[in-house]
Image 1 (tube, rainbow, N blue to C red):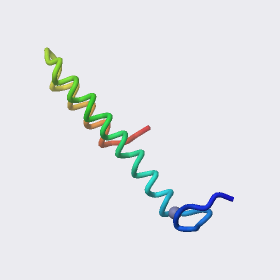
Image 2 (cartoon, helix red, strand yellow):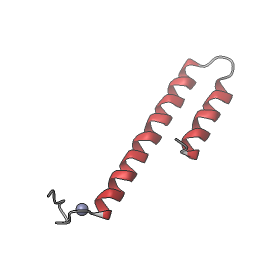
Image 3 (cartoon, rainbow, N blue to C red):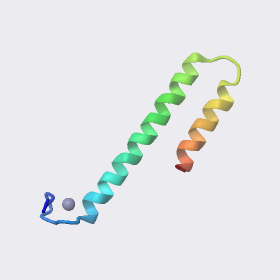
Length: 61
Ligand SMILES: [Zn+2]
């Protein structure tokens, strides 16, 4: 059986850390995409960036 650094087999702490880490990755990705969109500029930029960020905050998958 695999044991984490807490010496636990099914560790809720490690599971939680992994969950949060994945959420951080998602948010970073959304921020990067929004920034790229802003750098492109042009018509509709503001609306599209707003939608991207709202979606990221909503976190619906
Ligand atoms: Zn652990």
